[in-house]
Image 1 (cartoon, rainbow, N blue to C red):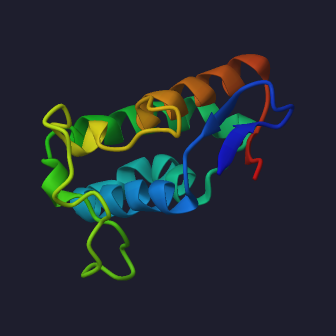
Image 2 (cartoon, helix red, strand yellow; image 1 turned 90 degrees about the vertical axis):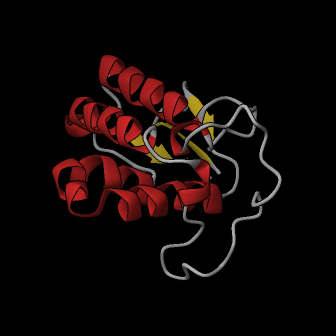
Length: 135
């Protein structure tokens, strides 16, 4: 699944849609009521899109989400918030380099997903573009 600027001059391949949904599920679950304070960031993780007017604020909120996820072990990640008993495909197969939920999720190219999404939002804000799901 690709997320990028509307002109497609910056694209992040998030892997499968399930990968992004798991990041969303994990953030909502681990943040609890705190998730309301970062609603734009949570919505971005859920939908994969962001209006230009919200890119800067969404990036700040995604940074806050990253900090909170950094305080949680990868074993606390949630594969699917709708079906919390379904185990993630990585259970029992994680590298010791993965130390938190903040660095658990990667792009299809192996880059840290949250970092790439932050970069995308910042680029979109600078170039005055919406962020959209490209396919």
